[in-house]
Length: 232
DNA sequence: AGTAACATCGGGAGAATTTA
DNA sequence: TAAATTCTCCCGATGTTACT
Image (tube, rainbow, N blue to C red):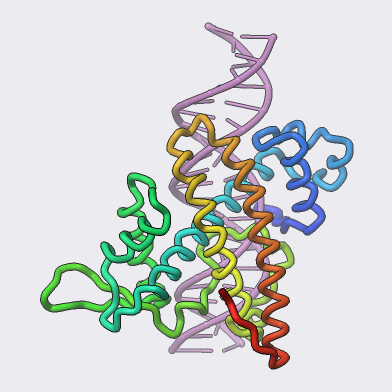
């Protein structure tokens, strides 16, 4: 038996994104029936389209949280690390408003990042609170443990490593900028009725993140040629 | 009410990578 | 180099929503 694995090609991704723009998210059948897209998506079912977007969605949320956390920690430069409350307050201050369950999600994500070695967990004798600070691995992120549908021509991990941390770092940097926009989406996702509209907005934000990634890549190339660039 | 389409999630399996 | 681990993708079950 066994599933026939069919990696998403760039053409399929483009066709799907074009379909979402044209017909709207959730209109998978319409997208598949669209004569302009049917050929590119001929080997995909409506379930495939749905799952692809769903996984993209999940992936972006991971980027969202990591981006906000890394930004907070890079500003909270306490040598002993920052506790969850300090990180929460920073993000809340920046964001003005956060989702009701954000603190819980933040705490769990911090534990996860610490477990993965992307953050350093600092224990203090005087406090039961966990403190976290960035470490050398903070910007050397491996891909999150969710399918990452945007990366269709999956490079081997060795290739990724040989390029150094820059690509991952670029993703993180791009996500920081996109993070505050994306969290608005999350706020409204509590009202599940409007999820489809929010996903549509998310698609646009994803495009923005991609554009930022292109810019980040260009900057990286310039830097690698010895040019000095300043970030505001 | 019946039906079609969709959302969400868990789990299985193959491929790729790491480790001993 | 084989075994173990991680990543990526797909399928199917279940529940919900929208339409007729």
